[in-house]
Image 1 (cartoon, one colour):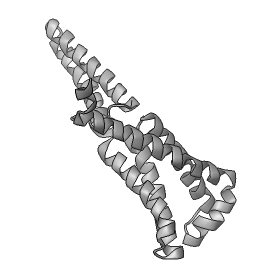
Image 2: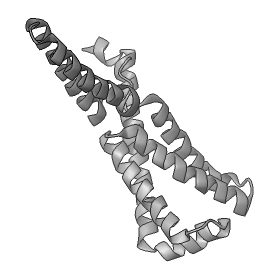
Image 3: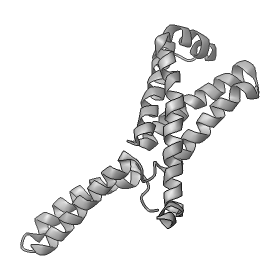
Image 4: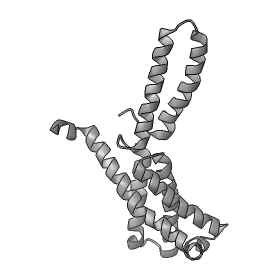
Length: 183
């Protein structure tokens, strides 16, 4: 039992779970605050940057923080959620630099959110996530299809085409969208 807990993989997955849940939990309220008074947020943060469509961009920022935070917390499409947060926080860092210069008191929280979301986007959600559950289900379906195709060689051509079309989609999801399971 102790050796399982002390393994590198278990520690890494636990650390990613903690990072995901805490980052999402403490960031989500910022999105809800934006929605509470979207016009005020647009006036204070978007219009000073002279960006077009300030109300639309304010809603986009709020929903990316709320949606991205929920995706981090539950571990579903985690990299997508982390990238949404990275985008919003990048604009917030730019706003802080433009309006206040290099003020570490304004930047420190933004930089911590940026570092957390970037780390999650680069490493993936870890084994304790819905992404991992989905990948394991998809892998088991591909393995079952491979076994069944080996058993019945009479309709080999049709099954190979079916396997390639499904396997290609599952492989794309696994390799590009859901998570890194090579660890």
